[in-house]
Image (cartoon, rainbow, N blue to C red; front, side, top):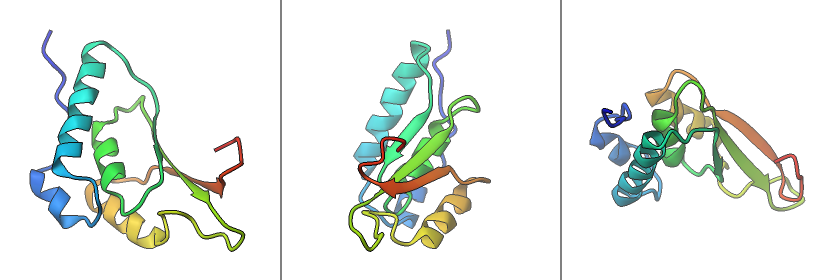
Length: 115
């Protein structure tokens, strides 16, 4: 059986998106994904906290049509401010630079069990 290889962008993509996800993090997440595919493990991909979209971009590259990517951003105070997705337009801009569609984005209070 041929190992599954995700259709990753050129490595320069990481440098063009602000954020804290490192190249080592990307390689580790990609290797875990390869192992899961080799063992036929699949399912939805959930990211808690979006930041600047680096992880979301990587997860979207790793996902298959049957594995939707969902970003969950929790509200931490009464003003409605979120922990990382503070600039949603910037997040969406970065995502759409690499993908044709956005992941599902859920925003709500951190005590909301639906998130």
